Image 1 (spheres, one colour):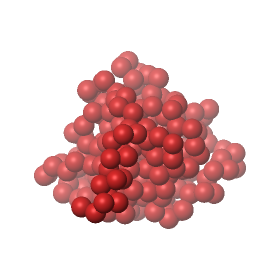
Image 2 (image 1 turned 135 degrees about the horizontal axis):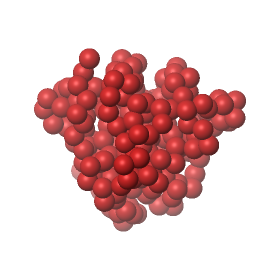
Image 3 (image 1 turned 60 degrees about the horizontal axis):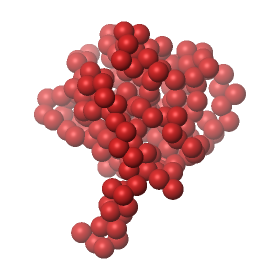
Image 4 (image 1 turned 90 degrees about the horizontal axis):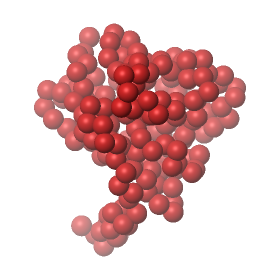
Length: 201
């Protein structure tokens, strides 16, 4: 390990705020859809854009999202729906499906990771819509990361995002730790490791 790499790791540990979600049932994970696949190395550290869609996640006015123009090939995008407030309640699993027009726009602009503060980009925690969206993203070289926490602590519109997945054989999801590096501090956005029950179609 080089001295600069060691220094970076020490800074990461020193600056990380360990404020993980205590809910074991809805742990932060990346949906891979196809068992045995892995995220490309270039998605482990990405430039990230935060888009706040909490006013109306199911019908998003794309023209009202100026930060959408900052999304470019290979970056990650956090969609803040505000659904984290339902964590720990029965309502959490029934999260709204995010406007497909927005997802298609992000894919067209080359987003590699689409991250949400809910159990699914589409269709809630489980079900055919959830699986269909996972497949759509995987087929277009993108992946969903679900069950983020602490999005209210993000203070920048763009920042560096660190995604640390843990892979297991014959599973189509990987538990992961997500960190947002806003320059002055690194904020944990992930909860506990998760195994997804979604089966490939």
